[in-house]
Amino acid sequence: SANDVYKLKNGVEMPIIGLGVYKAEDGGQVKDAILAAIDAGYRHIDTASFYGNEKGVGEAIKASDVPRESLFITTKVWNDDLGYEETLKAFEISMDNLGLDYLDLYLIHWPIEGRYTEAWKAMEKLYADGRVKAIGVSNFHRQHLEEVFSICRVKPMVNQLEYHPHLAQKEMHEFCKMHDIQLEAWAPLKRGGLFEEPVIKALVEKHGKTPAQIILRWDIQNRVSTIPKSVTPSRIQENINVFDFELSDADMKKIDSLDSNQRMSKNPDNFS
Ligand code: NAD
Image (cartoon, rainbow, N blue to C red; front, top):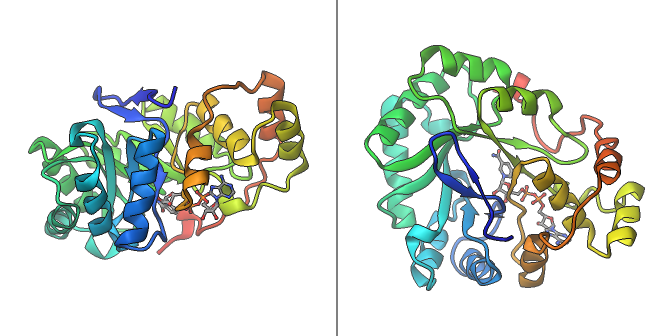
């Protein structure tokens, strides 16, 4: 159901589907989108300091009838703020913007060479101090995770990667499973770039669901957490209405066949 969660390795429960808010404007737009999402049953919101809308996210949390403890809020430390003191400071600024006294998940946004291990130590401190319930990374490939493992006391609990049928991240998914790191999908809909795929269209016909719902269902059946973005209430509702049907093994394999290493964003292997 829409209330389904994944249990992270430290026992924290992460709602499977969240609302992504990249490019939702700070203030009214992001606030209204989140309130519509909460009405539709979402309990998980994905923002980042880079998105410039943490204040609007905080206003929505305050305005909602749902208790804060029932919500799962993620934000991320931006590239310019990677470092021990820098990351601790960036966290406090994000918390001020959000108006929260604890965070559910804090992520390192990108693995900037030479800067993320110190940032990871700050993440561990925030976790040890109880400021954040879970800590993780984003856009980290195997070599980045292995470098973190070599210096860490607490391993990342989540890795948020670009993930959709054109970029199924098979190898990274296996690696994450091996280390009990929950994979979370960003750009799960490839920003609309998958809706015309014949395979998706055929499954739309077969199941009487929309292209977005077929793709998000594939995420869930792969045990990936997913954070589709929309500011349109009807789409927000559509994107969480994926618990009343099931893709068969053959359906899943057809979607798997679309994997073609097509990225929306930079490859973390040669980033920075
Ligand atoms: P997405 O794949 O979620 O696509 C969003 C776009 O798809 C919307 O703007 C809308 O145009 C369209 N859309 C959404 N629902 C639809 C529907 N039901 N029918 C038709 N069209 C629909 O792309 P995204 O926003 O880039 O990714 C989702 C979230 O992931 C972001 O909002 C952000 O929170 C996160 N993200 C993280 C990183 C990172 O580096 N960690 C990078 C990008 C995005």
